[in-house]
Image 1 (tube, one colour):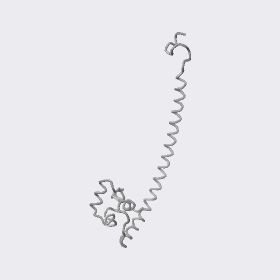
Image 2 (cartoon, one colour; image 1 turned 90 degrees about the horizontal axis):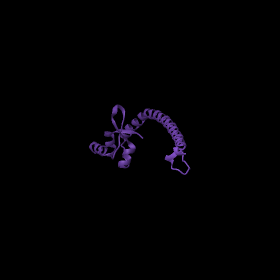
Image 3 (tube, helix red, strand yellow; image 1 turned 60 degrees about the vertical axis):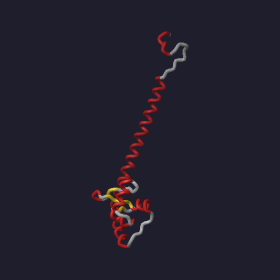
Image 4 (spheres, one colour; image 1 turned 180 degrees about the horizontal axis):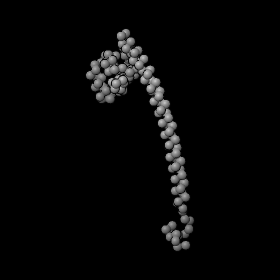
Amino acid sequence: MAKVSISEAARLTGKSRTTLHRLIKTGELSTCYGDRNARMVDVSELLRVFGTLEQRPSEQVSGQVNEQSDTGVSAQGEQVIAQLRQEVEHLKTLVSAKDSHIDSLKQAMILLEHKHTGDSPWWKFWKR
């Protein structure tokens, strides 16, 4: 979805910027950072918190501009997703290597735990 500034979010919801900042501070409304580290609110977050939004015609135009600017962000998002997928595959490889190492250590422990079946206790092995 499109991301809008806090001022635009206030216009869309009919709430004051102070109210939105209070909701952000309490954690009821989540934000992200857009261009030049400006705080942005996802429209889906506004829908989740406030329900349906009423857009006036002038606001629809600004929403379309924000959606167009998100296409550049989505290309970066695709690149980040690809990198994260590679990292996940690498981590899966590392986990499987750890698991096989743990299995080999378990096998070694089984071999080291030689259980004596004789009559004398195990600590008297030198008295045979």
